[in-house]
Amino acid sequence: MAHAKEIRGQIKSVKNTQKITRAMEMVAASKMRRAQERMRAARPYAEKIRKVLGHVANAHPEYNHPLLQVREVKKAGFIVVTTDRGLCGALNVNVLRALVLKMREFHDQGVAVQVAVMGGKGLGFIKRFGGKLVAEVSGLGDRPHLADMLGPIQVMAEAYAKGEVDVVYVVSSRFINTMLQKATVEQLLPVEKVDMPARQGMWDYIYEPEARPVLDHLLQRYIESVVYQGVVEHLACEQSARMVAMKSASDNAKRLIGDLQLAYNKARQAAITKEIAEISAGAAAV
Amino acid sequence: MAMTIDVQVVSTEGSIYEGVADMVVAPGEMGELGILPQHAPLLTRLRPGELRILHGAETEYLFVNGGILEIQPDRITVLADGAERAVDIDEAKAVAAKERAEALLAGHLDEMDYARAQGELLEQIARLRAIQRLRERGVLR
Image 1 (tube, rainbow over the protein chains, first blue to last red):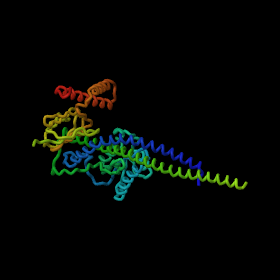
Image 2: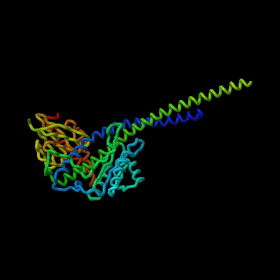
Image 3: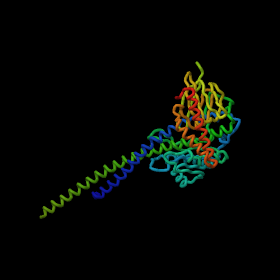
Image 4: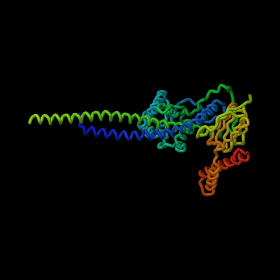
């Protein structure tokens, strides 16, 4: 049985850890609320613009925009959204696992892969795991601005337009509820068609002033919006995953303290009993 | 039944308006567009200005700060860069922002900042014009 004093030290250290995890839990909870609001606000725009572009992909434009061309997949690009900081459960692991699975699938088909990374955790992973890294941005903070994300977005869009990649995916996590986040791999380019049962056959939009500037503008907004949505959503996921992880860490610390307290009491009693036994043995010997 | 068209206005900060309308008037890049149900598919950019949604006797006034307009025969989607309901426009803020942009333009700027300040100025002018017009019609006090 360990010495009572040693156990007391252990209890103290676990209590200190518990204080930290509890504080992190509360910080994450308040950040989570704000992050969720931002995510909800950005969702309708991203959904609508996806739909509009789905319609555009269905139309038969007079002008074939480079970002709308569907090609045979020989090279693939990924935009991976991860967090900058850890201690958020399995969130990043799930995202990176989804990425690796998809990369392996492409590898088996002989498709070359390049990756653009957002967030420090993904960057570290790609460096260790290997893979062609073409762009990276980290330190986006709690209130990400689109301007900070434009680097990787531009790199991927240009690579697609030039034919350096034939398909672009965004890998991030989807916020389902506070307890549940799901890693997703979504196709960004080429734009996926939306079924339009109401309109069949050949049709096209009237463009004002002309097809090219309108489509340029629309596609630029689309890519920005989808990636922004991915980042904002991932941030909401990060905060709720961290809150849940820190909550279970606090709970575990509580259980550990309980066990240690029991061991400490037993050790203390054992020491007292031993002392009394020694004293009475000493008295009997006199 | 009278024909109506579904209207959805979303901005990057959230959904602004969702409903049905008899007619929508939007500030297209090439001029103002009046859109009735069963309009041919159309895609255009919007300039900063006033968006009117007419339904029955009621008219909803919105201010859009540029964006994209998609028309399908049964649906109008406005993807605004920024949008607000007319009653929410803050005139004092718009005036202040306009003056700031003017001051910037008056100073020495490189090309990038110049374009940005000019865009900002145009936006605030459109916003103030929208307020003015609403006032003339007696929508705003």
